Image (cartoon, rainbow, N blue to C red):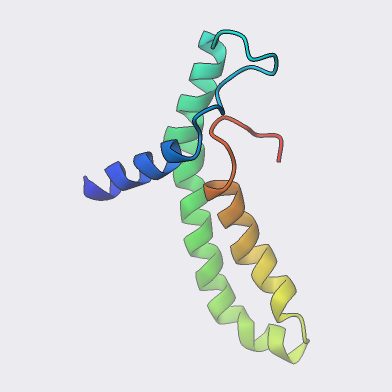
Length: 95
């Protein structure tokens, strides 16, 4: 329960204006449902992908080091899912 509260709080903390429409008019029902779907479905999947990506990186890092591609593999498996999950505004799927 505490983990859920922390995840919801962290997702909402950086997204004060994310659910506004492009012309800063009133919030529509459609944008609210987009934000709710993002919060309840996409963010948890992204968090799981971040954890799985880190585990995969831990296994693949020796092979990436032999190919001198550690930074590229880390960016692909850990950084990109993490940024998509935690740095993107709530309801913004354009990135």
